[in-house]
Image (cartoon, rainbow, N blue to C red; front, side, top):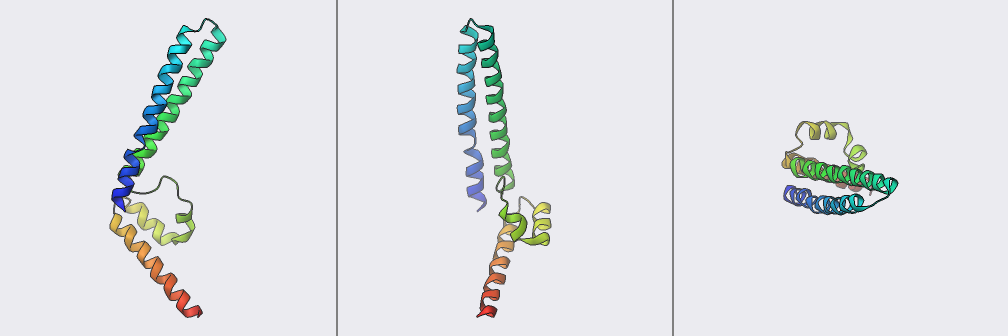
Length: 116
């Protein structure tokens, strides 16, 4: 489970590199443009591409380091308050996350057996 998160985090570098490459060409075209309005627009687009690349890199690093998804709304209400507090203390501990998931599955199985 942790290995896959690291791979997903490292794969975030690909879109970041693509965004930076596109911003390079936007800057080249903006510098060669004669109109001041279009030149300014090119610089603004390049800055937005840099911000998007920075966000992509930071999200990828977060996923690679913590082993968690960047945003998973299901984890906020499915695990309950005690599971989330344990995850906040030990974000890099994959065995703890696996243990919490296993306990949740066992609890759900027991609830299904009781309802039958």
